[in-house]
Amino acid sequence: MKVVVAYSGGLDTSVILKWVKEKYKAEIIAFCADVGQEEELDGLEEKAKKTGAKKCYIKDLTEEFARDFIFPMMQANAIYEGSYLLGTSIARPLIAKHLVEIARKEKADAICHGATGKGNDQVRFELTAYALHPEIKVIAPWRIWDFKSRSDLIKYAEKSKIPISVSLKKPYSMDRNLLHISFEGGILEDPWSEPPEDLSVMTLPLDKTPDKVEYLTIAFEKGIPVKVNGKKLSPANIMRELNRAGARNGVGRIDLVENRFVGMKSRGVYEAPGGTILHAAHRAMESITMDREVMHLRDSWIPYYSKLVYNGFWYAPEREVIQTAIKESQKFVTGDVRVKLYRGNCRISGRRSKYSLYDPNIATFEKDSVYNQADAEGFIKLNALRLRVLAKSAQKRYK
Image (tube, rainbow, N blue to C red; front, side, top):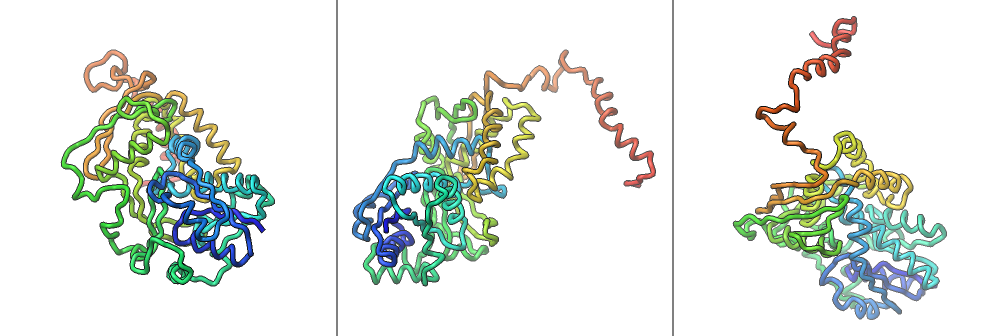
């Protein structure tokens, strides 16, 4: 039997790699997707082989991740339950896509992931896998083995001499990529407990940020960021540049309790410095370039679109249909946005576009010859007509 294992080198997947090899007497092909983990990939191939893998694929997917997943999602202004920028959610379909591609290439019998039976990631991985390879077999160890907790995994890893980077004193589950880093577990399982200061990885604590305002200018073309401070950068490097700017100013730290697809509430702490800046800047760019009704229509899709991404339906036809409409809405979302960063805050300080719909001659509070204020009376009366008819009828609503 040959199995392609989604491998990160962390506690769960290290134990999984060895456990699957022993249980199924399988040949293991490890696959690690580089989606912006930074130093976490150092020595990964050697570690995978020492743990039992015959081969290890490490693919740099950072440009594809930013270009084909993060940026289209940002065009939609997707944000789940008003707070979560979907950093983990949007990476899963990309990873699963390449997991399936390697399985086809290696003629593997199955793919394997390390998502738990309580979480969302199992759904995201498997929905993508089945959408792209309907007959693929999926092994999900957390749903079938005897281990009950990460404490059990730590003990197994120590017994099996598998090198790990967590301990029983600090058993956080972390997931990092270009868009964010997430923390779950340990003390965070109490929603009243404040996250410890040492939980910062991508952002500086506020008391260590500079006491000085920093300005950034982001250039957009059709809703896609293309330059930072006048410098043209690749999609992945735009995310890196925004992450660095947000990090040094303490921008993008989020503490929330979210509703998982499987039905439970979960507390997580996230750092998304670049995503927070990009989300704010994109909305500002739209504010002067998008028609009102187009914007309101698109905004009405945000909760549904975000839920599709969160729940793992990236490759579902309804998401693709909505994405097509969103892309059309972005035709003139082109121009520059200036943001102001200071001690955890990201504020918009300017926006400009050759396609701007903002007309100062109409909007001015000073004397103008464009807008006849007397016209407003008829406008109001026509809009009030049905309300006046109701008020005169037997359908008494207010006294």
